[in-house]
Length: 222
Image (cartoon, rainbow, N blue to C red; front, side, top):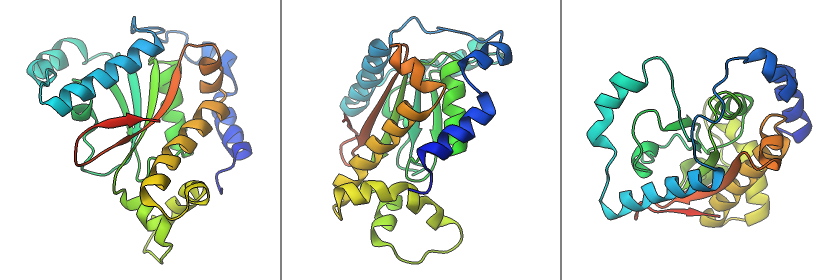
């Protein structure tokens, strides 16, 4: 894997140093904005997906009001989602959440990169989110392309080394490789980030993996 754990730690540590540095960098950080525990945050996320699947969504009615009254000067998300950039995966809709509730990062193949790491570390250390979900999806083009291993234009192939460990583990099965990719990315994030790892260890944050099924709208956690 090109993006190794050693490189991961060096990259993030160089930017944030350690949790002690965060106290100096973000003296006014909004800790524990959400009253939810990590377990409750995950439960709320999945309850929203159940509403989406069943067609009983409740989030859109108050979007504009919430945007105007509560999110101009601050944001208070309870969860973060690392999703594939695929246009068929509308994260807020999938979890029936409104403006300001989810901190969403997106990149093809839902892979961990330094930029994604920094963004998720910010969501955890500064915004106080309680759960991070690495979300893959069925029929993922990035995983499929990595499996095929064919020549591609531009920088598309830069994604492949991040996905290769999942292919090594799951073989040529697209469904298995997609699931393995979410689990590997979540594990890397939870264990290697000098900001996120101690929060997970202390029970202040959960990092989980899941796959969104395009045909049904349902998210299944690993």
